[in-house]
Structure formats: structure tokens, C-alpha cells
Image 1 (cartoon, rainbow, N blue to C red):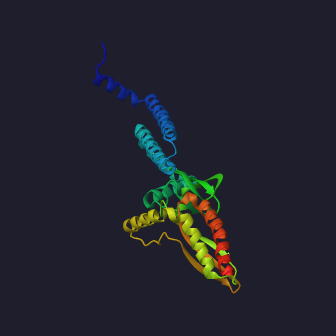
Image 2: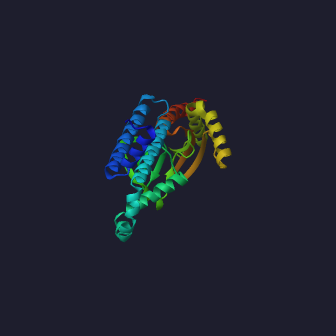
Image 3: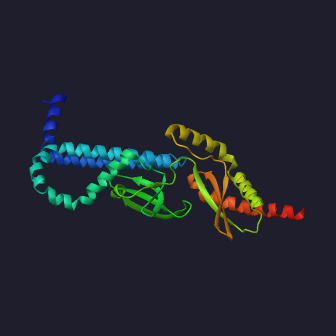
Length: 286
């Protein structure tokens, strides 16, 4: 006589409570989890590169949710066994604490990361004298794409355990989001006309950054109202630094997108050198 649905469910429930049933449920959970993660990665790659940072952020979030669900399901499957072994685990808790100290610190660092959110996927950060762009973050560590000066990628990756977050400060180089404020030092000679040099540097900065200054100002205004902070203007400014009596330095403050810093700096310098020769030549001709 064929089983009815309630009877089949009861039989499966009884089977799942056996040792073989628990092992099968665990294996099926692991296989399904791996398949879902692979599917999410393939789907993210097929969406194109319109917004890579957002796609990677969504992928990491979905992957971590799937992994967390799998861990909860496996723990629920073996809950009775875990409860029965609680007394035995308590006997060796001291030894486990010593052996798994780093693992527990990593979990505490992950909890702090989830609460304080010092960085997100796609941010440029600096931690333990290591700078890079955040590629991935799981329950144990964060993976960075290593960068040099100016957020230029080196092609290397660095894995940082989350235990470091408990004792070391994290510097987020892109905390302002889509646009960041940067400083570009430019050396000048004291015998040169500083006013003309400043005008040439400002003109070069406005020529290169002018197309996104208004958009950046609107972005900073929204950020100020949301975060209750005061941010500088997106318009270029020049500050004069006196290193020594014989050494002057212009510090150009400008804004750009985080991943375009090197390109923008090079464009400003090249435009400045071209504009500088024009500004210097004009008074001499007069």
C-alpha cells in the first residue's frame, strides 16, 4: 500500500534522526551550498562590468548568507549530538581555548566588522602598513588587492585575519564614497613667480577636474547631511608649504574617483607643465 504524504514525511523525519540520515543531510547541505555559491559567482560574471564594486559587494553578501544558512542547518541537524557532547567539551574547554585562540579572535574581529563597518567591498583601505582594495570578506579574513602609491594595483593579493581589527586601526582611503579628496605636492623654486605658478596649477586642475566638480559637490553635500560631517569643497585649492628658506611646495587639493587617482594626477602634472611654460613666457614677452 503506497504511503500518504504525511506518512512519507514522518518516515523521512525518522530517517533524518539516524546517524546515516544526519550524514546524508550534512553532505547534501554542503553540496547544495557549493552549487549555490558557484551559481552566484557565474551569475555575477554574466552581468557584465557596469558596476564591478557593487556586483562584488552583492556577491560577497549573498555568499556569506548562504554559508551562514548552511552552518545553521548543519548545527541543527547535529544539535542532539552536540548537546550530548557538551559535558565532554567542557572538560577540554581550557585546551581548546588555547589551541583555537586565534580562531576565536578572528570571529570576534568579524563581529566587530559587522557592527562598526569600517570598510566595504571595493573600498581602498590601509591596515598594518598594507594598502589595497577590498576584494572579499568572510568569517575569518579579508582579502585585499594590494596597491602602491596612488591606489595603483600591483597584481598581488593580501589576506588579513580579522583578529587584527581588534588591536590595529583601519584607515579607509575612500570613506567619502564615489569621490575622494587628494593632495598633490608640486615643488617650485623660490626665485620663480609664485602667483603665476599657482595660477598655472589651478588652471591645470580645473581643466582636468572641471567635468565632475559639480557632481562631486552634490555628492559631498548629500554625505554631509546624512553623516553630519563637514567636508571640503570639490573645487581645486592650492596651499603653500614652506619646507625651508630655499624650498617651496604647492599642495594641490583636488577630487576625483578613487580608481582614477593616478590617471588624474598624471594629467594634472602634464597640463601644469604645459600651462606653466605659457604663463611664464607671457610676462617675459611683455
